[in-house]
Length: 234
Ligand SMILES: C[S@@+](CC[C@H](N)C(=O)[O-])C[C@H]1O[C@@H](n2cnc3c(N)ncnc32)[C@H](O)[C@@H]1O
Image (tube, rainbow, N blue to C red):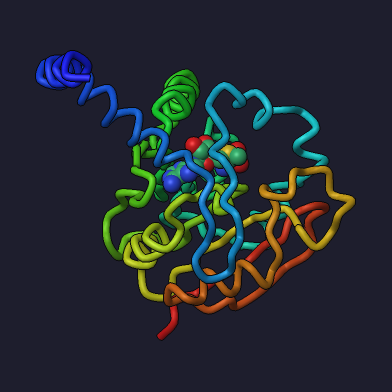
């Protein structure tokens, strides 16, 4: 017993084990499946960068029709938009073309590997209007009052700290700015996506409105996802 305690003291004293434990706890804490305190919805695990190929699959155009979603949003040339949880940049590339050379896209993610894939893509196509931002699990690290439209495509359900993220996103919006979520319809059991990766309109409304937004519009034109358009509560 005494020897065991001394061994632990020695190892901890070296600082190495303490660092390993702290890092493990941090990583586990970031990934642990939690539950939203208001809706009771279980958070989905974060999609790892190793799955980026799935984001770029050819069938995605037909399954999700993201261009139709962007048409619905009528994004103006010259606008500043934020692609939160941009992943490998499938949506970022479309947003970049929509806002044009006078506009700007903040492409945010927490996984540096995702942002690196996007950086390579931007460099090879010489695209200058995208700014990469590595955020943390509860802070997208965007400038305040700078964004016309913040989008989360297939991302919100993965947030492990949605309340704090939403407060930061609200602060990043310009007056009259919009927050848009695209989420697979949980109301439809025929949509072939795991339950934790889907959301109902009621869940999204309950959670997002609690952080100072109003659900201004729900558009159901897409084959599988809700388009949920929020504005900031006056
Ligand atoms: C399913 S992928 C969607 C990627 C992209 N929006 C798309 O549609 O191609 C979800 C992404 O959200 C990111 N993500 C999860 N939690 C995040 C957070 N708190 N802040 C920023 N990004 C986050 C993940 O790293 C992952 O790249």
